[in-house]
Length: 190
Ligand code: GAR
Image (tube, rainbow, N blue to C red; front, top):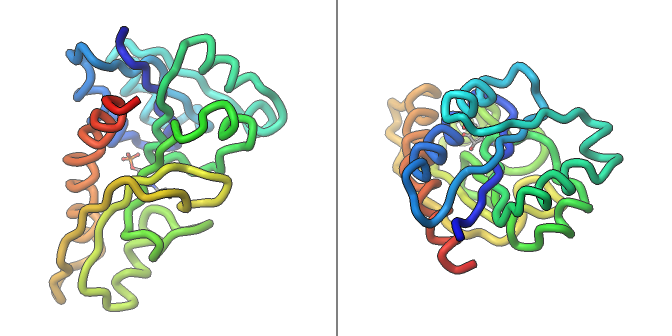
């Protein structure tokens, strides 16, 4: 039986795209559902292009009902992947999927994590602090933003001439390169 992945994303979904591409012809796993809190998120279009179903929820459904958990359970989802998902995971979902929810963060955690630390906010802070290296972290999700056991990190050196766009691009390249493989390795152990 193929392992089944659900991806949560709030925006563009370039990581979701790479994951859907990676598993499109896999015998081991498949992306079974894409979920978003944002009806305008481009990730929904990307899911449509792969003929992968999607589900959009609002704050009330996510935090005050078991609807999302029930949908995931009914689809026999094995692993939940947060790929640019900006809401905190509620307790009922954490409890239903212990050690089966992973997140990607565009920094070397525990540095530059926490509420409000996403997208350009992260990279601007890294440049303002004149960091010499930067990178990405893939970690298990818990009830706090950007905490939980670290599964994988990849890093790169920051050149003094690097701009915001450059470090953002380098980080994104690392995310696209590593995230699908880390997911594949994790699923092998499940
Ligand atoms: C990614 O860079 C991811 O690391 C970040 O959002 C971006 C989503 O891009 N996640 C966070 O900042 C979580 N705190 P994408 O929609 O193109 O995949």
